[in-house]
Image 1 (cartoon, one colour):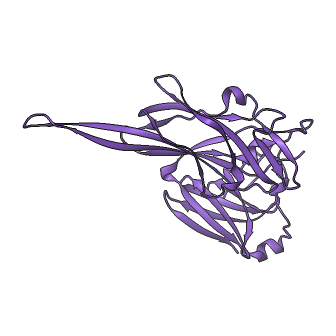
Image 2 (image 1 turned 90 degrees about the vertical axis):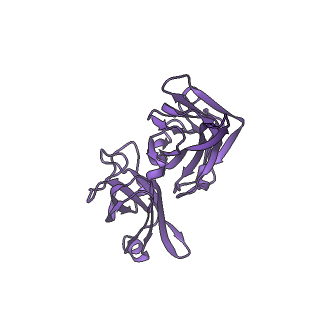
Length: 300
């Protein structure tokens, strides 16, 4: 059985723009304010260590106002996006400047083409083999996030939908022609996020005899005892460590403010998201983040 061990994230930005329209009337005059909100939808991802492509075909976006019917924004043509081309704090827009009403919304749904035995959505592994990426009930439900959000009148609000691939993409036994996409989604206020950029000294990796599967897991809370994806204490998110110009680096983007434990492992490629594995962590660090801040850390 083969498992994909990384996450991507899907970024929702609800931007409010204010347009002022003045209406004259007599010596006293009057002014009418036309306040509008607009929806911008971006997609982002973190690297996967055993695949070269993870392509999802999006056909539109649907949002559900609390007091009204669902609203669909369908694309003229489906868009295939390679999520592995979007890493760290990079993103790709799906919607740009679509006007929406202010108010409370109950859910967001990403419409996708991800059927069995098709290559509308697909994954390409490091050995060059390609498999379809199947979303159970995807043609009815798509990728749905049930967490609500508010669009204030005339204000800008933004959110990140964090889609954790490490927990979500599997290749079940007997399903050799399909990988399954079972989304684990989190809604994050995009105006309150921070970014962690880090390095790992080569001596740390050499001393641990790491060959592949080098990653940093992020756990909520200081001095947290780290565990694997299949455990009851699975990480909040994770990031692959890669060699860049002679330096081992990692990036964790779209992170809510809070207290975290960073844990370095060489066993990420062995981490089965559906079972409790014996994953070894070779170093840990504490970090506390604030909104709209960038942080540098180093494992030395």
